[in-house]
Length: 311
Image 1 (cartoon, rainbow, N blue to C red):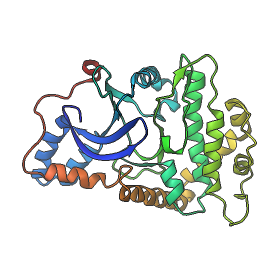
Image 2: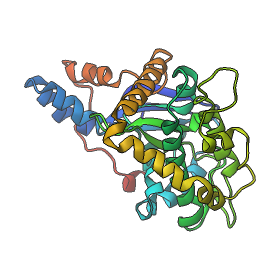
Image 3: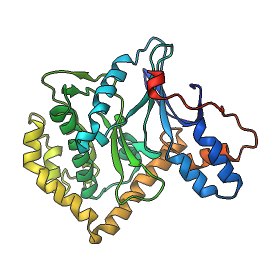
Image 4: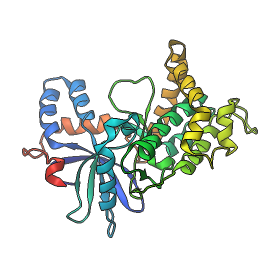
């Protein structure tokens, strides 16, 4: 664990790195004062908003290329809504071993793989369209807006987070793409096969009648049939984009409250399941509460290093 950060929990591990949720120590000290005054929920909320993910490389693994890709992508993220559909590089240490990246994260989340595995079927078709719209925003940003264009190279259900960015309940969960270790700049790039395969997995959870291969939604069924695998991103969006936005709009309409509630239940159950398996954000509030309630501070009084100091 880097200096100036306190570990909260391990959230996942792959062949190249381990990811841990942590809090900057500079956030903990004032939060402890609030907690001691009895302002406990406010103190926990202050901390939740500052939680980061620390990616630590395994022996022999370099995170330099991932750092460079995140620097380029992050520097232009405010130019397009898709820039908010990815984790942000906050700081990095690739000068010492092991390499570490400090990344933004969603304080309450799991990956799509966990959601697919644990959230019972059938899902509301609107959830699949919501995922598609946000994934499209990300790919549109990477392929059409970012200069130079970038190829992600590993968009799969384990590298897509779904969850919530703030302590309060949001109308719909958000999507964030992680793991840019295979990403690189190139003149022509197309992650669309990954997009289509991921959407096929998500869409299959919307099948309402066991033993059939249909969701009852013609647009989603096209993903199951693999119709779009050889299409460009623009062609896919031209075909189903307006309809996708319409279906998401139905969720945001006052009449969509009941469906949104069911989506929250699905995502919440998957986050809880991930916690029981030692992955995802898990019981983050309890982790923070334990840190704030501890009588002896293990934190440093020095300020947290900025990205400029660390990179």
